[in-house]
Length: 186
Image (cartoon, rainbow, N blue to C red; front, side, top):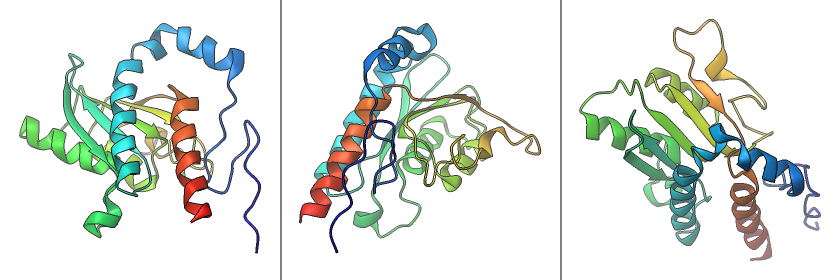
C-alpha cells in the first residue's frame, strides 16, 4: 500500500491536520491585535512542540498563562515516553499550572496550544475553569474546540472558556506535517 499524497493547502492530510494555506489570510490574522497578543505564547508552545518532536512524540506543545500573562505551566506530548494515554501537552501544562498555583481552579488563566484540543483536553479545560483556550492548527479529525466537536462552548456546561483559533496556524501545522511525513518515510 502506498502512502497518501501530501495534503494541499487547506486540506486535511493523513495526520488529520489541515495543511497551511499561507498568503494573505495568515498575514491578516497575524495583524489582528487579539491574535497578535498570543503570538509570543504560541512561540513558546511551538518550542515545547519541537522538544516533543525531538523525542519522537507527536509535536504538540502548550503553555498556561496567568491573568497577568506570565507563564505558569508548560507541557508537551509525552504519551510514548510515559506510557500514559493522558500525556497530552494540554494535560501536562494544566497539571503544572495547578501545582504552581496550588489549586485546580485556573480561573483567569489561558491555555495556549499548538493543535486544537481533543475531547479529553477540551473537557479538562472546562473542568480547570480556564478563561480562554488559544490554539494554532485546526484538527478536523479529532478537534473538540470547534472543528469536529465544540465541547468548550456547549451551553449545557457550567463553564465555557473563550476560544481564539488559528494563532500561527501555518507554523503549528507545518511542524505536525513534517513529523508525520518523516514517520511515513521510516
